[in-house]
Image 1 (cartoon, rainbow, N blue to C red):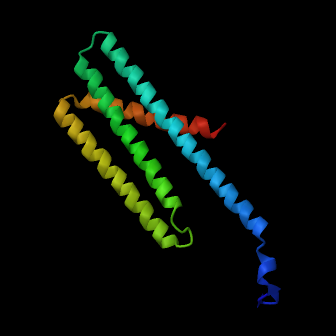
Image 2: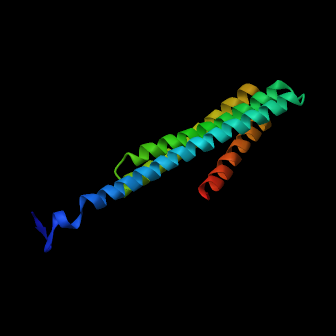
Amino acid sequence: MTKVAGENVEDSLTPPLNAAIIAALQEAEALEKKEIRRVTSLQVALLTVVSICIYIFGVAPQYAIAVLSGGGVSVLNSALMAWRMTRANQRSAHDAHLQLRLLYFYAAERFLAVVVSLGLCMAMLKLPLAVLGGFVLGQAVLLTARLFLRNK
């Protein structure tokens, strides 16, 4: 038994206390993953329904494809955010500078992925407003679903 500043090291951090902290963190991470899956599923479902409605109501099929591809960019953004959140949780939380650098890198990576994907969709489909509309719809679902699912 070693002594640090008059205390026993084994007595200061008991295994049951550490185990409770680790279990709570793992439970919070599991709940976050479940919430992200639900939000992404809601995005995909709503964008599919809107695209089908656009197609059914007689608008050209290209508009439905453009809305679906713009929404797909939003889903890509959500999936990239979820993947990077799980990767960040696997790293040590003790190095604040590393965490901050990763935060900036992941944000820049998502921004670049969205800009490039939207640019490609707009250039290929030649319907920029429909693509942007689908993207905005997907992002609106992301924000509102995260807000309402968190309040439960």
